[in-house]
Image (cartoon, rainbow, N blue to C red; front, side):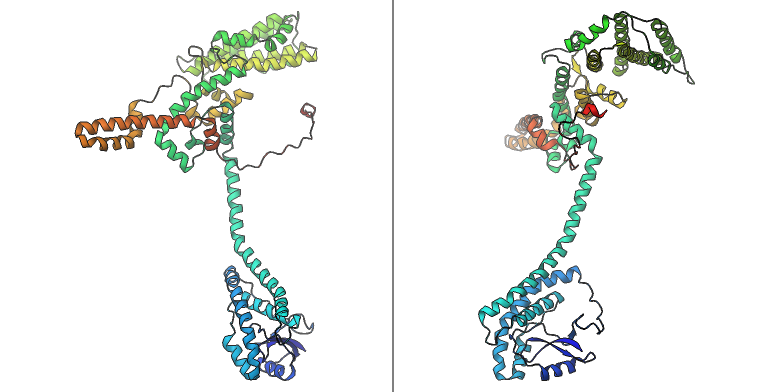
Amino acid sequence: MAKYRVQGPDGAVHLFEGPDDATPAQVEAFAAQTFGAASSGIPGARKSVADQIPGANPNMAQPAPEKPLTLREKVMGAIETPFAVGANVLTAPVTYLAGAGGPEFQRAVGKEITYQPRTRVAQEAVQAVGQAAEASKIPPYMNPMGFAASLAPAAQAVGDIAQTGKAMATAPLAARNALVAQNKTMQSYQNAPRIDAAKDALDLGVALNPATSNPTTANKLRTAVVGSDTLDTKLAQYNQSKFTEAAKADMGLPATTTLNAKAFEDARARTELSAPYNTVRQLKALMPDDNTMAQLDSLKVQPLVGDIGQAAAANKVLDAVKEHIASGVDGKTLLDSIRARRQEAQAVYKQRDAGINPPAPEAVAKADMNLAVANAMENMIDANVKDPKVLADLRAARVNMAKTYDYERATNLATGQLDPQVIAKMAAEGKPLTGTLAKIGNVASNYPEVSKGGLLNEPTWRETLPRSGAAGTVGGIIGSSFGLPGAIAGGAAGAAIGNVASGALARGMTKPGFQAAKAMPPDFRPPAVNNLQPGTNVNNLR
């Protein structure tokens, strides 16, 4: 036997058992003859074919699985469901009262006034209401409290269907949002050097062109009002002093100091730099160890095709050094030698960076050798210093001492201004830079248009006039009422006002608040995770 669900003469949905192979007509006739239980009067979804209940009889053949609902079907079903349930709930009392005219009359009335859902979702919802009414055993007189109680589980079923439809409808949107977030994260990783450089610029007080660092539509419009080239020039002028101030602070010099040769000597004479070296000066005999000699040997240059004396000049310096230190040397002589070689190399590099009367190739090769030899002799000092504290102080002073030479190389001693592009070149060459020096190199490398060195002149009137075109046009129109002379005068006055306004806008872009809010590029990278336990000494991890 199989279980069937059909709509009875009273318009309600009923369950009963019948033959497995019964036709729809036989099922309805059999139900009319054998089933006469009272119903709630709430009709279920109208079905022209009796449906079997899967799993009710383990011996019965299982129906083919229903085709999954498409997204459109679920959305349309969620829209139709409340109307279908509401319509059938409202017509149920009328169908029930029509039973006074007999079963046939009741059935005819039910067919006419009962709403037939079109979507499967709505059909299942109406069916759930009918099942809930049957399960609640609503009495024939339609007690309002009982009727309300029957709707509670039905409402839950309808709510579940609606939630499913909502979840299906929002799933593509959630997937799209996840893809957008993933793309933004990847773009941030690809733009990481410029994002990090922008953060360094904010730390240094350096102003960026917002249309370059964070090219939003609003930022592009702001820059268009001033003019990109004009704005870059104004920002580079503003930043030049910021870079120089940062260098002074990093070397421990007062902000009022002019960066000239004496200023750098004063920076190197500071106690924290000079004290460790004064201790080394007192050493009477420093002997080269095997590592020092091996380091010097590794510096030997092999002549290349077309060599015109570069290799010979460099190797001659190397041989003289090895011969001099082989029998030992006092601390003062060694330190003076290191300083002299660094200064000689520095002079060659500054001449090359200036691009005026560049040094010969052999001079550059000799400068490279002098710098490498100075580094080897510093390692020789480390091998001879036995006091751990003196050695630690010496290494810290060496880092700060090297920093002063890097800043000196990047400074125009005639103007006292730092050229950040020289530091950017050091970074590009692979020179290890740390702290403020590294930040300057990072900003100058990624935003060269606002990190210029040398003399920066104000934009000429030819450069600024096109940017005052709108204001000049308005002024010309106003002045035209006084004839041609008035139009000319009005246009000139409008252009002047436009230039003043654009200048004020450019100055506003240098403010730290504006830079933090508008010029910083968005960073969607997840924050770095610090896996160190609180109180961990990083020196113990070496």
